[in-house]
Length: 129
Image (tube, rainbow, N blue to C red; front, side, top):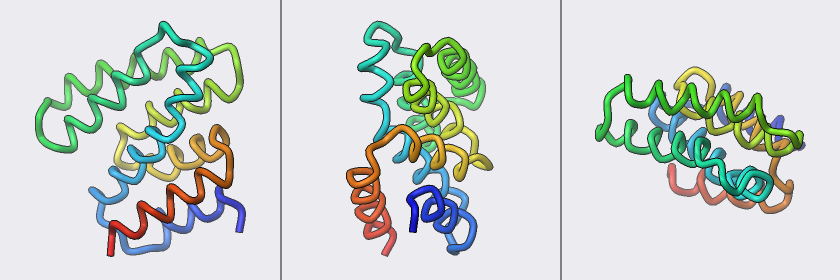
């Protein structure tokens, strides 16, 4: 099963709570952050969005603070000059939206090396048990 299809199935067909979907999207974004940072080492907008998403999901910042970081990550995705780097930035931006967990997973799937990414998803799934 291709990783994109697996991610879609996990988010759309498994009985995950909204919060579990959000944490899955966050997990996907974290996995591909190094790809973005390798291409854009001085651009911290994506990592700041990932950090803000995690803080928001843990109740430590407001939605307004998250939206500022989300917007910055979306601009980073548009500015990324390498296709895989922009997918990583997209994953971070989408991870901050509860309803875009599948989109974040898709973006991460394009950015990550399939074998390592698939293994990280299985580890995440194990934490849900």
